[in-house]
Image 1 (cartoon, rainbow, N blue to C red):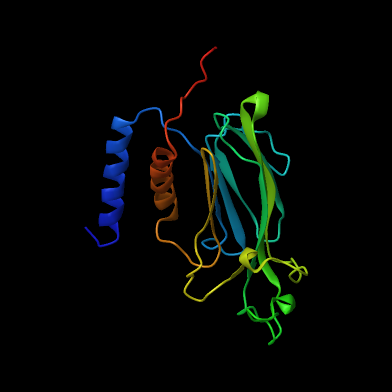
Image 2: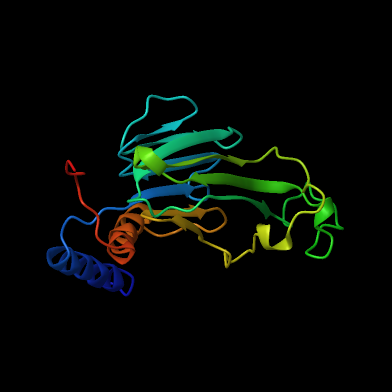
Length: 213
């Protein structure tokens, strides 16, 4: 067994063992991979009981697709949050100082001259009476112009050669998300599925069906 596969093997065993002890665990998930496919972005999602849609597609519970790198991916999805989600909104910008189109002045101390390599914006709307919380927003890579004025430095991510900034994680009640932008990952699909299996357990118990009151 290779050194890399051993941790995955142990993680898989742990996930199965915990699932047997804590049954009926679910968590909605989003995974965006803008690193492992040349000039393309893979967008995957799962366990959205109210459906998930990308660029106006028919809402479905679980699925994914691959898009061109310059495509703005507008999305919206609804999942059961058991009334625990909190209203939230944020926009995050990735900057790549290695990009040849960036001026020499592009740096952490002068981000206003840097071109945006990726942008992710999302909003969480609590469930209220509907019982389904909503996440909506967009992701896009390439062709995004320069950083807007007065951006919070905490919302700016500099891409490093070694991919030290990856992955970018975001979450809400019973929802976990991850974005990979600057570093290729070995066996990304396997790592993602196992990771979110554990994430679902960490987030807590969740019924597969909402029983009638």
